Image (cartoon, rainbow, N blue to C red; front, side, top):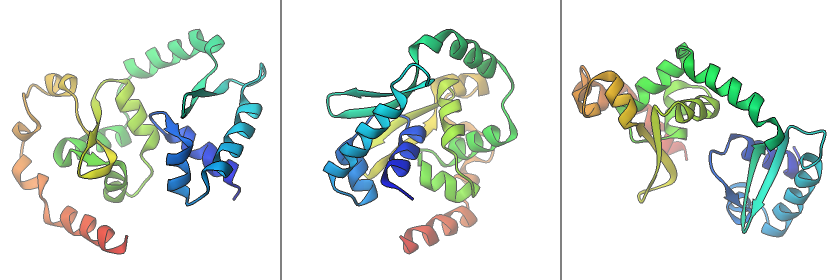
Length: 182
């Protein structure tokens, strides 16, 4: 798999701008090589025929939609946000509610599937928050105030069986096995 392809995938799933240095560190590559690949991606996407753009501001890069398509994207997002949550979205939201704050890899270990798109959708709907955690190198996800309001609780700890499920033995074992393998 080419470096450009790997970077393209990372930019696609990233929920925030990334520096070439961050990408290089994650992939174990030289920053100069990542910067070159980013320029290739900019040349590929930043043209009239593409619906995507590679944004570059200062040291940061992010994949985004073409601003000319904003009306179509807005219609889709409104329809998507107004619809009911899918079963995978509900499962993900439940894990975040009972295990949060939780990183994406921890969430994916529990669910057994990639959760990048689901997380992005839940963020767009305002049901979860993404925050930095001093103890973890990755962002952590937790229920938003909006989600708590919809659930009629003031804290996730007020959810039914929270104390039992928050530190459930099976989940603890699953996450501990993953940590030991890292």
